[in-house]
Image (cartoon, rainbow, N blue to C red):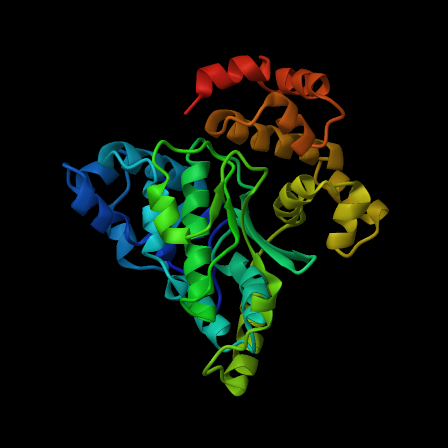
Length: 349
């Protein structure tokens, strides 16, 4: 079963590729009980998911099954922003051992970098990013695992969790300047407004939270330097035992590089700390190429944007790094067998 229970030992194991720890979405059964006419067990059974999966936060579920579950829950509860609701119920403690790492980090920036650096021990399908420029910090989240719908629900859940993490680290006075979502603007934005208390931008190029970068220097009250050093050693060891091969690393990095507009072979090789020739050789050993990985990622991003946003074909082509919309259209026809406009009509959410 795709959502089969997998136990995680903090010392040795991690989710398989494409899987994520259920801790951050543990509120789903209670939310279904509160908002749906059917029981959680009945709804979960439609996807062959055992209710007991949510009893242990260290159990895992695949991204594909998770996306399907979010869509199903939104349908049964008639809550289009169901993912947002789930994320609201997940704070820093939902990250398990990483939450302890964060609260003992010397400052907010270090805490976020530590979460990002070690998230692979809990999440093998999505990647958070943190960049700064002109006194502005951008905390983003992208899914690199191929999906079968539900990506926008997972991303809105992630944005809510990031917001809760920032408030846990910085205090309730922290508010983002802007919150960006790639999906279309919903009919009712009040749930978003009440949570984020910030300017909202839909049909954006990425899912991200923007805030002044001075918050990254804020020290964390009660942080224990000795405990921090101990956790650095422990989690570095745990991460070293996570078996992430080159292809998964490359796929997780290509998505944010593409959106940033800097995704050449040299760019990817630099992030992976290897020479471009070495990267090409190692990809060839795995019977693929940089060009193939780029095409796969472009196809996945374009499907998500076409299905879940109103972003124009021209804008999608720009996001994906194409010279013009006609080049993107030809590429998408090769991938899917139909032009993007026709595909959007058939798969619109």
